[in-house]
Image (cartoon, rainbow, N blue to C red; front, side):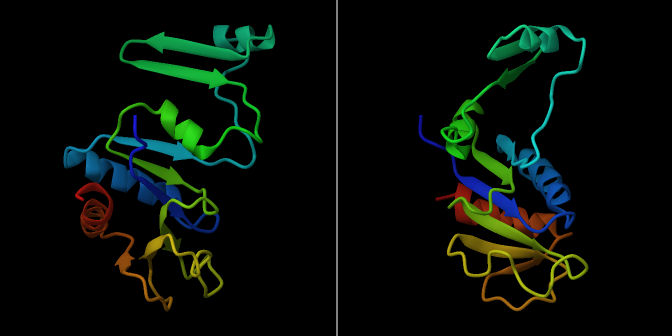
Length: 167
């Protein structure tokens, strides 16, 4: 199975990445696209809850735990951090039309950078990255890339469709 197109929403901390991802996923889904997401978390995370069955399975030594319920599955699997890539995680998402990641600014995925004049220091994090497709935000930044107001989700979705989905 070929990897679907990937769009990374990148930017500094607390600049609105999650909000943009959420709104873009909703708009693309409304337009009929199937969307998978992948979140980068440098701090680590915990999906299981202490005392729950899957947590107990992991505590007993299970390397992978999968839970299945009506219409959904959840998988927690131990991986070697040096060998498991974003592409490996994308393959686990199954067949989707597009994957939108939050973070992964060092990957060579197509990117939209969120720019917030309140959070950035007057420059883009990925301004020199050839995979940077566009900038979304409050837009006081100079760039030769297309710029979008971060509230203009239909225009951003149009751009994503044109650049990544309708080839």
